Image (cartoon, rainbow, N blue to C red):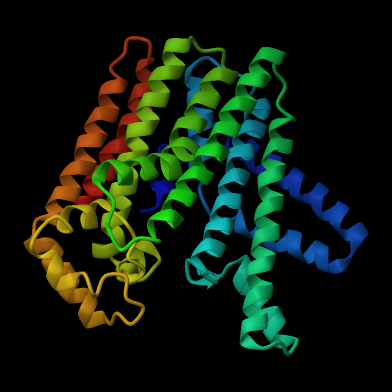
Length: 355
C-alpha cells in the first residue's frame, strides 16, 4: 500500500525538496573530492529519495502548521531528516531481504551488483558487492538524517527533544527489524501480540509517531497534543502494517509494486499466519508457506485456505479495529479540528483498501 496517497498535501513540501536538494548537492561535492566512484554512490543514493510524495515530511509539516508553526523553511529541514531516515531504512531493508529491485527498478544493491557483473565478477562476488554497497549507502543516509536534524533552529530544550524523537525512531526500527529476523529462526508462527509489536516497532514509530510528534514539538505544542499524536500514530501505523501485509498476499501486483506471493514464499510472519496457524487448516499449508520452491499454484492454494479459514476477514477486521482506535485518540479536545480533519482520512484509507 502506498502511504503517499493517504494524506492531503500541506504547504512546505517544496521547501522539503529544496532542503533535500541542498543536502545532496553538498554531499556530492564532498564526495567528488574523494573520487568519481564515491560521487556515483551518492548519486545512486539520491535517486532513492526521488519519486515519492514525502509521506513522513507531510506528517511533519501538517502537524507543525496546524499547531501554529510558521517557519516552513526551518520545519522542512526536520521533514527532510525523516525522509532521509526512511531512505536509510528501505535501503537496509532491501539488504536484509536480499532484494535487488524495488518497484520494478534496480535498487542500490541491484545497481552495484550489475556494475560488478559488468566488471567480470562471479554471480556470488557481484551479489556481495551489491549488498555491501547497500549497507554503505544505508549507513550514509542514516547518519546524515541526524546531520539534517542539526540544521533545525530551535531552543536547546526543543532540539534535545527532537533528537530524542529521531533517536527513538531509529532505535525502534532496528528492534523491529531484528525481531523480524529472529522470528525466522523458528518454524513456529509467533502469537498475535508479538506480530503487533513488530508492526509498531518497524512501521509506527518512524513513519507515524515520530514525524507527527516532531512537528508538534517544533511548533511548541502542549504535551497533551504531543502524546495524543503519538497514540494516534502508534495505532494508525499498526493498522497500516496489518493492511499492507494483507495486500502483500491478496493485492494487485500493479498496485503494490511486488509479486503477491513473495511474502508467502518468504513465510513472512503476519496476522494472517498467526490466525491460521492456530487452526486445523494450517496443516495443509504449513509445508508450503516459507518454501523457496513455492509456485504460483501453491500460492493460489494457500490464499484459498486463508480465505476459507477466515484469516483474511480476521486480518481486515483487525486493521479496522486499530484504525478505529487511532481515530479515538484524535477526539481529544487538545487536537485542533484542522489537524483532526487532515489525519482522519489516513486511517479511513487504510481500512478502505482492505474491505
